Length: 262
Image 1 (cartoon, rainbow, N blue to C red):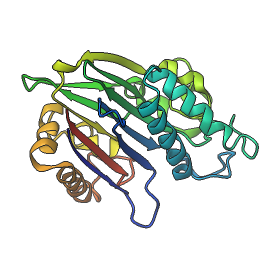
Image 2: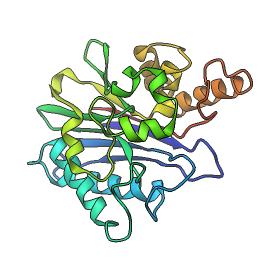
Image 3: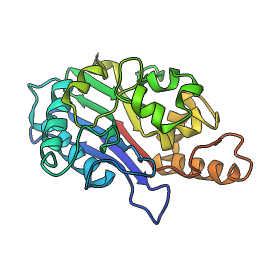
Image 4: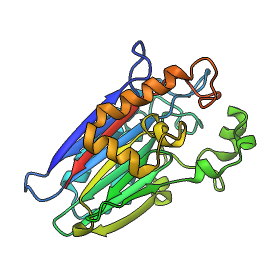
């Protein structure tokens, strides 16, 4: 197996809220990739004493341990247990019912000699390349399908859409959200390589429209994960003034890419 990983903050003066991990069980059989994108809260309270990086570090650490050691657990079961473990770490000090309690998107994939399993929650992405070179995106597109008018204010999003039926879901404090993830399994022989990306990296395709998912995968496979992030940074800087593509989005977002050849 060969891996390539890069995670770069959008602002060098602020902590990176993403998490990325690659796990290999001691048996040498299979492995896993985990990517989280911490959700930056708006100005105001979150009901929590802890930062988003505190949350993603603990959730990511729990996911890594459980995915490597819990081979008998399904990926939704692993996510549910990791959310519960993280919530218990600050339930006594923080209001976990607050809609902006620390939370994250999730990409989790695990492979064995026979299968490749995946789980995607919210707007990070998993790309899977088959033996014929075809690239298949695995996406949770519930947020993308919402009308832009519904996302006009943070108050409306929190009250009506965030972790609500008919809206979108993230990993926060409720383990039940694991059942809302996009999940599946592929025969191992149908997967040659995969890439997990936060939306700061998928901007190359989703926001700037520089190429489709296959073209994005080619950049990573041929030039490396860092090359994709560097291309995104160049596009962001070029659009900083006119914001023809960025719109109201932050100019630079945390960007994480994990590439693995199986």
